[in-house]
Image (cartoon, rainbow, N blue to C red; front, side):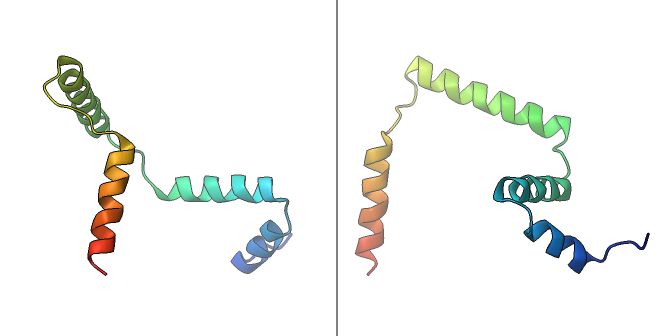
Length: 80
């Protein structure tokens, strides 16, 4: 059996149902990214814990999404 070309693989994949194409795409995309190093994962976990502690202690105050959204839209409109 002759190996498939990239074009042949793509053509065959495009003939699949949407759910199968999504799985193919997800698998291919995830194969492009190396998994983050353990040091990076640990650093993010520490940062998340620090931020949660700040929120829980009242050291920082969260701003509701609706307020942030309104500010962003207001800034975008001001630049026009």
